[in-house]
Image (cartoon, rainbow, N blue to C red; front, side, top):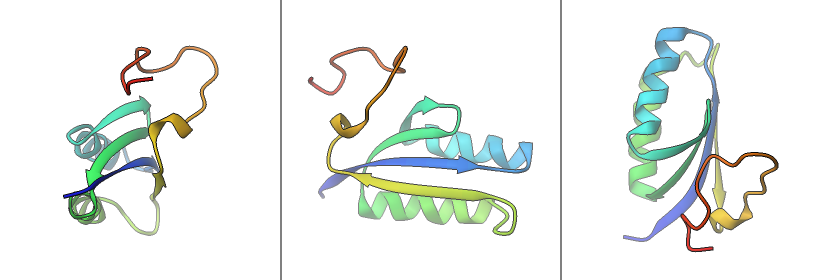
Length: 90
């Protein structure tokens, strides 16, 4: 199954829901910042994660966005990066 690179970003209004969303994303991805994760998943695994997140969030208060990337090298950073150099073979 082919996997793709994604960034998932979220803004969750409630602390309990925030913790649950964080744990769900951490289980399948790498945290870049507090509410930003890099995911390397198949479309099926991404859909499974999104279904799980949909069960957690309040659609009227919370916001989750997923961006598909061609490669993690498309991410530009300034300052101290979250990951050691070379983690993606660069």
